[in-house]
Image (cartoon, rainbow, N blue to C red; front, side):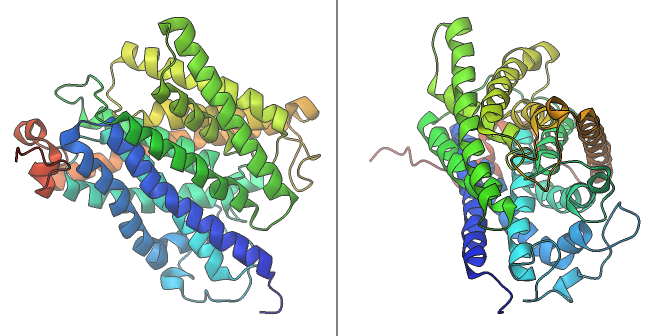
Length: 409
């Protein structure tokens, strides 16, 4: 215990709790955006992810993601059931107990599948979601986490700089969400009907708050890199909110509250990869670009191509995640983080190349394996709700309860 830094331990416990707080934040954000008859089923996805993946992570997920190996593709099972994992230090975070690192990373695995659920809200059977969450986390999230974050991962060794999950969480969830939406098909009525915008905005605000633990906590120590990650996170969120609102103001004549918080989330997504590697000024550029890119993807590309990504997991997390990958490849500097690498604008074009390779590799793998998972599941079970259940609402048809008591007294 004497080798541990108690300040770092306190910081990481708090950071892990902040990331956990993002789960109810996402539940509120997503829940407010769907129809009132589907708010509980949508909320259930986030909380079910917290319960299911918390167990999966301990049993096998952590070992597959961070366990040692020699091939760079997937971890071995040496740490399955947290065997050989205890209060000793480890190479990933030497100033805190190994188990605390496990807890912090577990929350990332939970939030990622919860983000994916936004793409198929209002039309997936809950039993199918349970199976999908387990398979997807094991076969998609865990390998990609190993590629990028494990000391033996092939992308890590190639030189990718992914501070808090631009590839592992954002691009991964966004692309997987798009594939799921395409496989399940459109809802019977796809016109967006947010039933409670204040709820969604509150959820977005909680996400913004929790993201400080998500990004600053990824420093794994209470140091200057964490400070930089905290500041760049807030800066990019603010820039994203401004650019999205400006797009609405110019094109639609009115800036919306929902647009502002959506832009903030886009900025948060985009800065996730580079928050510990870029300057606050670079964060402004990354956030501004992400807000515009996600606005265009959701307002125009989605409409043009006709896919039904219910809550825009791809338009927000996928598109902004790509913006973050490119932005980090451009703006990363060792002046911010001596342990990192310089990007293109600081004389190292190879980092941008590496980031393009990483983003495309993660996207292609996530798309392919997600498609296979859904197709195989479809051979053994019904994935999508029937028309009658969809019409009645998933809250009643799948969970036997209603969010709001509308009975007259």
